[in-house]
Image (cartoon, rainbow, N blue to C red; front, side):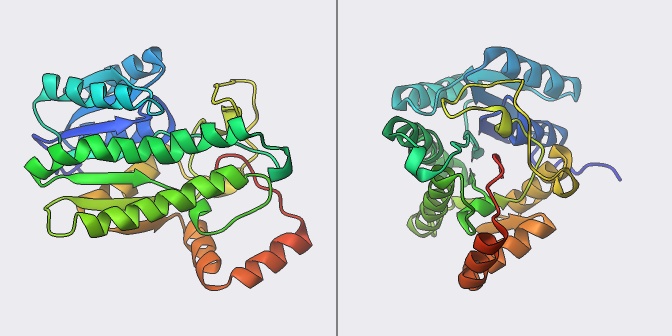
Length: 272
């Protein structure tokens, strides 16, 4: 089936666009006709994603950005506008996971987790919204099913995704009737490199991904689903079958979740 080019003449900016879900989204938006801008801290990864997008015939750009720095986010938005003149879709995707039991997590690790996953997304939204108002655009926050159901071993990550969910719900109210839609997406298990990033936020290729492979969605499949939700301007979207079940249980049967996890002794697997 031919790919619909629903985002022709649209400019899409993706933070955390050098790998994982960000890369897959970039390729999907490129296939759908968008001009794609990817941001992140690793220039080599961004250049590779740009090359892949260009192979599909898309206009693509790499703009370095560290979302933990407000100046960096502000400058990245200015650079996107300098190159592309407008913003139609902004995907706040940058994030990582701090793993470990809460009694073992340092204040520095907590701050690093929240600075990236929460403050980084909020600041991305802050500087993108004025431009999205001009185009009636779409703001996207990439959350996680971890925002609705917890497991031991990743308190900071769960806290960050709960907070991101609250930011998405609040923004949807604040931007109501502005012409800007806010879509908060909560994936289940999706192929990515999040399991290979340590608590310091550093990529380590030798780390094992302990998430259940049999539940894992490919990045391509996830991107198709996410782009469709973004196109339809969904407000809150959960995907993967197991993700929907877990999210429902977390919201409607928290006592059952607590009982099962504490009795079975489930430990969080980095990167949900």
